[in-house]
Length: 248
Image (cartoon, rainbow, N blue to C red; front, side, top):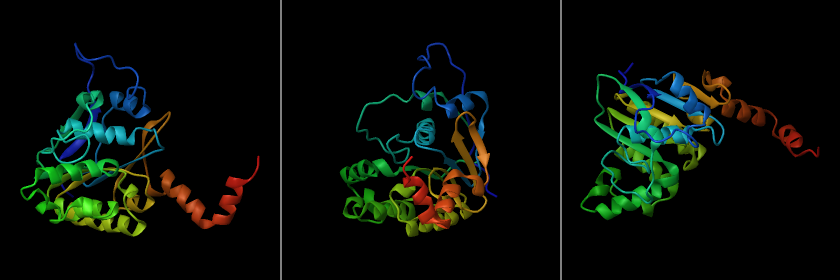
């Protein structure tokens, strides 16, 4: 088992001069939970699951900010921004680090990969060499996403992924699982927000369900809602849809 780059995350108590902690994201149950107790991270793969609005992406972005990565995606060396935005949760996040330090890092979010690809093209000077040498804009969304994981990601890396299945086919979700396995074997650590039962099947991963009122709850693979819902649908699609579409 690898030594973790990140051991846990929590939210520090308010300090004098901090902005008020009200409104979004402070009312989220996951944020309330992190103010009460730290969240332990798996040294290999940690998954965050939950319904839309539960705070998965908010927490992944806050972690990226706390680690000095670009909040719109990229590594700690990316300096672009398409909009001015404060990051109060990231500024308040307390990260417990391990002894090891990552050789490289990357925050990969499907929704803003276009912006990161544009930034790389603007850099020029061989910036694309680490991404397979071809413009990410010259590839499909899924192909460009995989190009980053296959070429830019490397050993001893710390990788944050926000809903990668949004860019990937089912087959390429499995390609990503394989790539994660290779990188974990080479000393890397992942924190991933996802709805994908395929990704969640990564062997030995820690899965946290973000919900209300529990806030954060560790669950087994078979207990994860995306797995239960997908399994229920596939067992009998016709019966499932009949119930779903029935008139009240």
